[in-house]
Length: 358
Image 1 (spheres, helix red, strand yellow):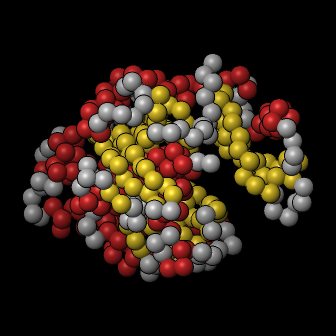
Image 2 (image 1 turned 180 degrees about the horizontal axis):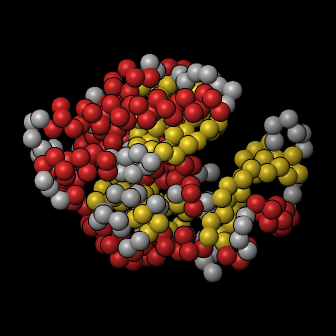
Image 3 (image 1 turned 135 degrees about the vertical axis):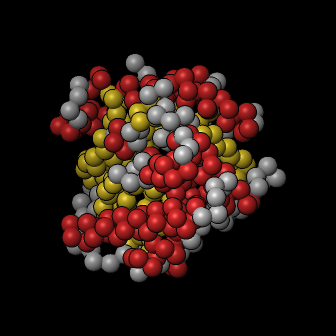
């Protein structure tokens, strides 16, 4: 049994380690007081195709090797990392409990509630909880977030960290990590995005995650099978490349001049259409009928002109996520590179913020 919290605790020095389907990403932040945050360093290392499938580690050795390579570029000095599980691997539930319970009493109450919602025996899962605050409209009670995941999902992440000489002191949920980073992006919006509905569109290699939030609280989420791999496949067919070579050429920007017109622009149009469809699903399944701001994140968000294409299609103010915009940078970080990589570092940034948990 692994004695590991799904929420974790504060670590003096902690880096965020995000393992996605296409790459591993490391981010370290410092500061956090009146002077704000500082980006100390970051690193991204591409993963072999199918090393991670649907959030599951399919090739532990390949992922561990990629983390080691990222660490070489990242530099020494970090031992503790915060990692995350995909939302599909975690069962979360908000419950209401009486306030003032002692820790042991709350643990027993949480286990009793968890038995109703978790379709596994409790000895097969890592279970944790966190008190969110007073329960809305219920004096004398508190709102508690329960999170549970099968132990093998957690153990895979821990094993990867250990193989790279790291210690996973926090295991979070990707959706919660990205919401933490979104708070930094929201602060850049007019009025800090207060009382506005913000659509976060995270477009990865194979999946587009859609989350609608109001005042930092998620009000809707949806996952759609659309991502950058479709563009990679188009490149492979158009130019007679292997899929790996097509991905490498896409990242390096070494494709023929006609690529932008023949492949990238049609892909961006398709992406904008998918976003528009996601918004319609949101409107028809909730009481909301308006989106105030649209934030694009994920590896696909770095494509030049994407915000304009999506904004024109949806008629919503659209920005590219950059949680580091107001941060100072260490001499190890190149501003131009970070600006290009920022949309794909949302989860890693959110995990790095766990260093400053109270």
